[in-house]
Image (cartoon, rainbow over all chains, first blue to last red; front, top):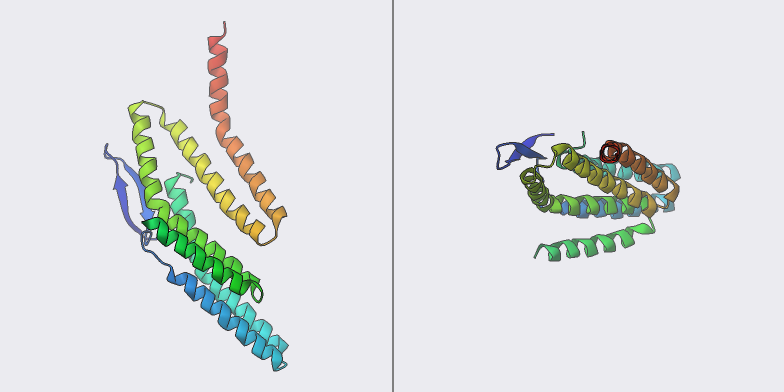
Amino acid sequence: MEISGGFIGNNGIPIIILAKGVFKLDVDILFKIAGIGIVISILSKVLDEAGRKEQAQMTTLVGVVIVLMMVIQLISQLFSNVKTMFQLY
Amino acid sequence: MEIVQIVGMGIVATILVVLLKEDKPEIALQISIVIGAIIFLLMIEKIISVVDVLKSLSQKASIDMIYMSTVLKIIGIAYLAEFGAQICRDAGASSIASKIEFAAKIMILVLSLPILMAVLELLIKLLP
């Protein structure tokens, strides 16, 4: 993860280094995930009605994997921030 | 008025979770994970300043840095374990949640053992 900048304490010791993109308000990922969920659910219903059970299942699986890719990035950002902040190495 | 943003985000996320829970519970769960992470990342700046103040206070009081960092580590482990356990419990896997909490308790115990030993040694020295 890239490092954007650190806090320098009063005595010159660098205290905490934050990962990039921390202070941005990124709510749009929430709407992205919800949109993917709605689209996937409609698609799988349509495919189910058309009698293509396997393809409906595949669509669900692909949707879950795509969402998981986005969530994992956020979780790794969260974990690295907590690790640097509380000095858990 | 950052609290308004956070409350609004929470309400919107709750509505989305309720919307998606019937058809796709797995995506609803991921939305709840994301909202937890976003709220924490928004609060991280303030937590950093609080931790900074605590550190400078402990330096002024000339407390050994190892005790301060142990306390911080314990807080971090407790927060992460709580985060994971609540997600597991939301998804209905409360057995996994209790195992995560068990592991966190053991880790906190291991971290706090040196301080306990230091206290005990001091006590033994004080006693005649």
